[in-house]
Length: 184
Image (cartoon, rainbow, N blue to C red):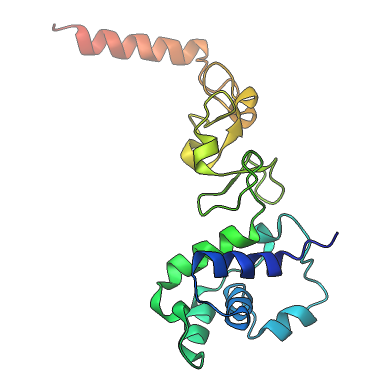
């Protein structure tokens, strides 16, 4: 079955911003990723519209989107929402659905450190399940991992072992503590 992510993104946009027509929704998606028209997007033979990680591989262009929305003829709800919000909606529409709840979401995040090829996608409500997902103490909230990839020190595979001090670092810490507490 064909999974044209451009169509999915346009449908999601229409769901999130009611009253948006199909042609305006498709045009907005095309503009957000730098195309001057839906036709230009469809004519691009290098764009794989079925790639589940398409959202991470396109060139986002808020300026093109903003300029083209203001030029749209007639009334459209797209003119009444901020361009930033519209970009978030289109991003969520292009991204895969959450692997847990199977819903598209504005809070969708890729899993793992590999930015072009994530391990999966999860929304914020599902990601809050600490038995399933977690953050690395070094990567911070920008990256989300499966809980079984985070070690007991809260480190992802990329940072595993960084919290363990070598003998020289331990000596430095002990010296610092001794210095700070000597007059107490």
